[in-house]
Amino acid sequence: MKGNPLTLIGPELQVGDHAPDFTVVDGTLSPVNLEKTGSHVRIISVVPSLDTPVCDLQTKRFNEEAAQLPGVDIVTVSMDLPFAQKRWCGAFGVDRIKMLSDHRSGSFGEAYGTLIKDLRIESRAIFVLDKANIIRHVSARPAARLCAGGSPLSPASSPETFWGFSVSPSRRSF
Image (tube, rainbow, N blue to C red; front, side, top):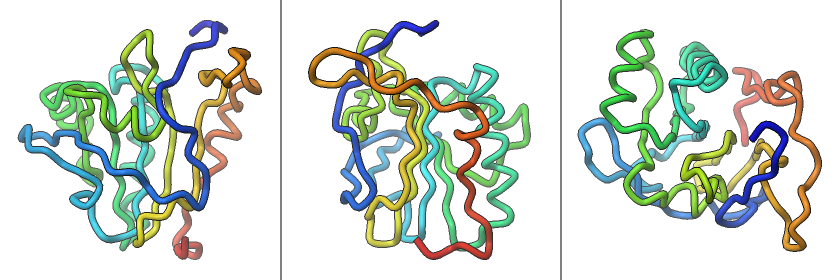
């Protein structure tokens, strides 16, 4: 944070990889795994916390875009407690995306390589999975990842690059 590299736990997933399974909880504290996220194309938006400005913006934006993407399920994963996720969604009218919490075990973060070891929160990332659970797009914050030699990878992408990913109704095949 603030320019200092952090260690991410888990693999650096690539386009073409099979999406790993995980266990998180939904707003009723029920366990949810990969299979229960649906059988459509899925966009999984991973954020550290909904109570931060960029995560707030990212999640609201995906909620808006969800209306334009029939047949695409959008899921947001964070370490926020399900109660906090529900409060936040209610306060901002976010009702088109599924909120999932990784707070219990960090299973998602460990499986997708987004768990920040020292802070035990998720790093920002976006994964697009096709109907067969193959990863078709990965957008992650590489500055947070340390390579095997302990040196940071390339700097994080700019907000323009980060938001450069979009799924338009005319491009729905993944």
